[in-house]
Length: 282
Image (cartoon, rainbow, N blue to C red; front, top):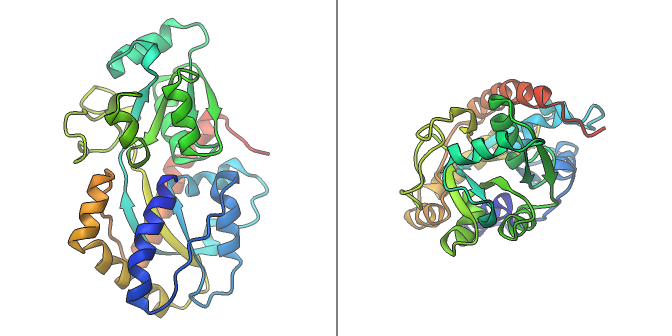
C-alpha cells in the first residue's frame, strides 16, 4: 500500500501487454528496502528481475556498515516519477503552519516526535533533512510502513511526519491529518492550495522524493535501454499521467546512464544528511 508499491503496480499493468510477458510485483519489504534490493543486485542479469526503489535507497550504505551489496552492484534503468511529500501534523497538536510547528518543537524541552515508514525510508530522510537543517530536537519513531505511520499521526500518537502525498491524499482530504506544506519544488497538482516548504520560509524541508527502477549491474545495455524506452512510453500515456496526477505524482524521465549519475549525486548529498543525524542500523 506504500508509494513504491502503488507506482509499481500501475507500471506493471501497462508493461505486461507492452512486453508480451507476465509482470509480477513481488513486495519484499524490510530493512529500509535493502532486502528486496539485495535480491535484485544478486539476481542473474538476464533482464527478468528488476527492483523499484525510492530515495531512501541512496542512504542505505550510510545506515548499514555491513550492507550485503553496494550501490555499484545495481544499474539504473529509469526513474518512474517524483512524488511530493506532505508535511502533515496530528490534528491534536494544534498547529496550522510550518512556522507554528517549528515554534512548538523549540518550545518543547525534548522536541516533538516525528514518524517515518522505517529507518532510512524517504520519509525519514526528509525529516532528518528538516530536523538537522534547523537544528531541532525530537524523537524519530520508525514504523514498518507508510499506512501505519499515518494512522498513528491521525490518532495523535505521533506529532508529525513527511509522508508521500500519494499515500496521504485520502487522509488529507478527509481532514484526519493537518497538511502544512509540500516538500517539492512546486505545489502539488492534487493540492494547489498547500504551499511549498520554500514558500513557507523553510527550504531545509525541501526534498525530491523519487521512485525508480534498477537491475543487476551486469544486465546488458540493450535490455536496460529497451526497458527505459518502454517505461518512458508508458508514463507518456494520457491515462497514466492522469492516474499519477490524482496520486500527486509527476513523471520523471532519464536515460539509464543519466539515472546512474543522478543516483551517485543523491548518495553524496543525502548521505551527508544522514551522517549528521547520527543514524545507524548496525
